[in-house]
Length: 252
Image (tube, rainbow, N blue to C red; front, top):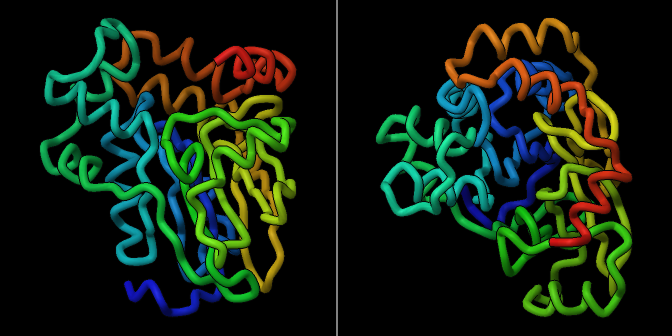
């Protein structure tokens, strides 16, 4: 894709974490189907249905813009035997499921990616922060912290879109609009598949609801991860509250 060409609209899907029912629910949204580009801001496959999610996203072809997340990087390291010792984790299991072409795909993902979007100008898409795919900033992080993580962003960029913390927000930081699209597959605070739409100069934070019982059953029945049922119940039902998640993330 020509990086200098203006894109009419962008649907942002972050932190899918290998949950196919949540992904399918978002892809069925009319505004996602109509978006010129679908930007995937990282942590795409580390979850109970990694192969299926990557194959489904591949169907989007050139509409999809892929951005590396820390979990994507970890899957590549684990698949190649270079990762940390996380025996028994869903990341170790997911890495072992991936085909060689999927490992190669994840290994080539860029971070960050900048697109020109109608009504926004240059928009920088990243996973955690523009300079690091595993750095923690929150909606209430102080301004000096935001100054640090935005230090490498070109002056032409007035909007930064991220994920990583699994909670949606929009805020200003040093004159830049910061958008967190939330999480499609592992939301904190309330259930549903969370995503964002950038169109006509307006940011819309969206939540797609779907049948949680059916989704948990589909993940449990469609995954060979030994603890798929427990994983699905906790993450798809968003049993981690926003207050709990913020407290934990502040300590990282």
